[in-house]
Amino acid sequence: MVSKILVFTLGFDIKFHIKGILRHGKDLSKIIIVVSEPLEDRAKKALDELTKFINEYVNVPSETITIDPLDFYGSIRVLREKFREHIASEFVFNLSGGMRIVVLITLLAALYSSTKSLIEVELENFKGVVSFPINVLRLMEPSSEEERILKYLKVKGSGSLDDISFNLGIPRTTAYKMIKNLEQKGYITGTRIGKKIIYILTELSKIWV
Image (cartoon, rainbow, N blue to C red):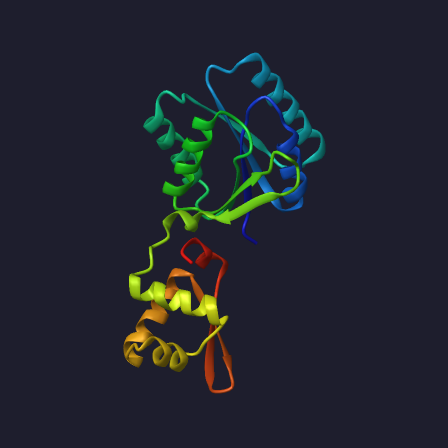
């Protein structure tokens, strides 16, 4: 079973952190807390409260990493190296607290660590959490012709290779290559129905069409 590590950026409040722990707690193998230096009194109090909660209610080890936000690139390296120590693990980065620069440093470190990561941010109005795979930050833009296919599928809802080729006036072999590229990029997915594969858009495609 692949271990899961939960990473928090911490500010003065731990309400979102507790929600994150309760959401992932039973699957966690470790919790990492990222704080900035110098550690202000309110942040130290929040850290003490969060550490106490983890020790009392979650049976997993925790580690606190302190970074200097003014050393932007050095801090990215420190976190990147720490995350890569657990390269075989799955990461969840809860970026709901802390200084904006610390959140940005942690996000970039997650991106450059090449770990399998999920990013999540709690909504300030407590109405939910937004999460997305870190690969969203590595997306390749579709070509103009590929974008035509995405727009076609958005309007029609679905389509086969022959549908796309005929209606967009694209040679079948060219359409096939573009469809495969769009599948690899994660913008469409295909399901075999009878002798045909029917393609539809994925959630990621909403970035472009």
